[in-house]
Length: 113
Image 1 (cartoon, rainbow, N blue to C red):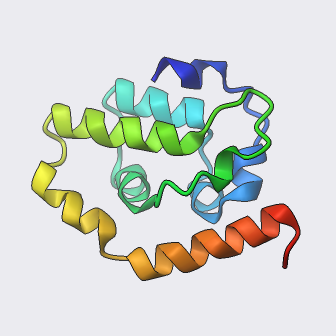
Image 2: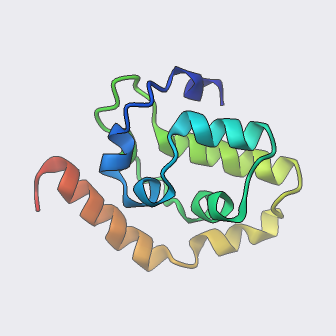
Protein backbone atom coordinates (compact mmCIF):
# COMPACT_ATOMS: atom_id res chain seq x y z
CA UNK A 1 0.00 0.00 0.00
CA UNK A 2 2.93 2.30 -0.63
CA UNK A 3 0.92 4.30 -3.19
CA UNK A 4 -1.14 5.70 -0.32
CA UNK A 5 2.01 7.42 0.96
CA UNK A 6 1.60 9.97 -1.85
CA UNK A 7 -1.81 11.02 -0.47
CA UNK A 8 -1.93 14.81 -0.12
CA UNK A 9 -4.65 14.65 2.59
CA UNK A 10 -6.72 17.10 0.51
CA UNK A 11 -10.04 15.40 1.26
CA UNK A 12 -11.21 15.31 -2.37
CA UNK A 13 -12.02 11.60 -2.06
CA UNK A 14 -14.20 12.29 0.98
CA UNK A 15 -16.23 14.73 -1.13
CA UNK A 16 -16.74 12.08 -3.79
CA UNK A 17 -17.68 9.09 -1.62
CA UNK A 18 -20.20 8.95 1.19
CA UNK A 19 -18.53 5.86 2.70
CA UNK A 20 -15.18 7.68 3.01
CA UNK A 21 -16.93 10.83 4.23
CA UNK A 22 -18.70 8.87 6.97
CA UNK A 23 -15.44 7.17 7.91
CA UNK A 24 -13.54 10.47 7.89
CA UNK A 25 -10.20 8.90 6.99
CA UNK A 26 -7.94 9.61 4.03
CA UNK A 27 -6.35 6.76 2.02
CA UNK A 28 -2.98 7.30 3.73
CA UNK A 29 -4.62 7.02 7.15
CA UNK A 30 -6.45 3.84 6.15
CA UNK A 31 -3.27 2.27 4.79
CA UNK A 32 -1.34 3.23 7.93
CA UNK A 33 -4.02 1.77 10.19
CA UNK A 34 -3.98 -1.52 8.29
CA UNK A 35 -0.18 -1.67 8.14
CA UNK A 36 0.14 -1.00 11.87
CA UNK A 37 -2.64 -3.40 12.86
CA UNK A 38 -4.81 -0.56 14.19
CA UNK A 39 -8.02 -1.62 12.42
CA UNK A 40 -11.01 -0.98 14.64
CA UNK A 41 -14.51 -2.33 14.00
CA UNK A 42 -15.60 0.84 12.20
CA UNK A 43 -12.68 0.75 9.76
CA UNK A 44 -13.08 -2.99 9.23
CA UNK A 45 -16.76 -2.49 8.38
CA UNK A 46 -15.86 0.24 5.87
CA UNK A 47 -13.18 -1.94 4.28
CA UNK A 48 -15.74 -4.69 3.89
CA UNK A 49 -18.50 -2.38 2.66
CA UNK A 50 -16.60 -0.49 -0.06
CA UNK A 51 -17.87 -1.59 -3.46
CA UNK A 52 -14.62 -0.57 -5.18
CA UNK A 53 -16.47 1.61 -7.72
CA UNK A 54 -13.59 4.11 -7.99
CA UNK A 55 -15.68 7.29 -7.73
CA UNK A 56 -13.51 8.35 -4.80
CA UNK A 57 -10.40 8.50 -6.97
CA UNK A 58 -11.76 10.54 -9.86
CA UNK A 59 -9.89 13.83 -9.98
CA UNK A 60 -7.44 12.95 -7.19
CA UNK A 61 -4.49 15.36 -7.53
CA UNK A 62 -2.12 12.60 -6.37
CA UNK A 63 -3.76 10.10 -8.77
CA UNK A 64 -4.60 7.69 -5.95
CA UNK A 65 -7.57 5.39 -6.25
CA UNK A 66 -8.77 4.82 -2.67
CA UNK A 67 -10.66 1.76 -3.94
CA UNK A 68 -7.25 0.18 -4.51
CA UNK A 69 -6.36 1.02 -0.90
CA UNK A 70 -9.53 -0.78 0.26
CA UNK A 71 -8.77 -3.78 -1.95
CA UNK A 72 -5.18 -3.96 -0.67
CA UNK A 73 -6.53 -3.62 2.88
CA UNK A 74 -8.87 -6.57 2.33
CA UNK A 75 -6.01 -8.67 1.02
CA UNK A 76 -3.77 -7.71 3.95
CA UNK A 77 -6.51 -8.48 6.49
CA UNK A 78 -7.06 -11.89 4.93
CA UNK A 79 -3.32 -12.60 4.91
CA UNK A 80 -2.87 -11.63 8.56
CA UNK A 81 -5.93 -13.62 9.63
CA UNK A 82 -8.09 -10.67 10.73
CA UNK A 83 -10.80 -11.81 8.33
CA UNK A 84 -11.35 -15.22 6.84
CA UNK A 85 -11.52 -15.59 3.06
CA UNK A 86 -14.91 -17.15 3.70
CA UNK A 87 -16.08 -13.86 5.20
CA UNK A 88 -15.76 -12.29 1.76
CA UNK A 89 -19.41 -13.20 1.28
CA UNK A 90 -20.19 -10.64 3.97
CA UNK A 91 -18.60 -7.97 1.82
CA UNK A 92 -21.32 -8.47 -0.77
CA UNK A 93 -24.35 -8.55 1.53
CA UNK A 94 -25.29 -4.93 0.98
CA UNK A 95 -24.61 -5.11 -2.74
CA UNK A 96 -27.96 -3.51 -3.72
CA UNK A 97 -27.32 -0.60 -1.36
CA UNK A 98 -23.74 -0.27 -2.59
CA UNK A 99 -24.72 -0.11 -6.25
CA UNK A 100 -27.37 2.55 -5.54
CA UNK A 101 -24.97 4.53 -3.36
CA UNK A 102 -22.16 4.29 -5.92
CA UNK A 103 -24.51 5.52 -8.66
CA UNK A 104 -25.60 8.46 -6.49
CA UNK A 105 -21.97 9.32 -5.68
CA UNK A 106 -21.00 9.12 -9.34
CA UNK A 107 -23.90 11.35 -10.41
CA UNK A 108 -22.89 13.88 -7.76
CA UNK A 109 -19.24 13.83 -8.88
CA UNK A 110 -20.07 14.23 -12.58
CA UNK A 111 -22.78 16.82 -11.92
CA UNK A 112 -25.54 14.60 -13.30
CA UNK A 113 -27.81 15.02 -10.28
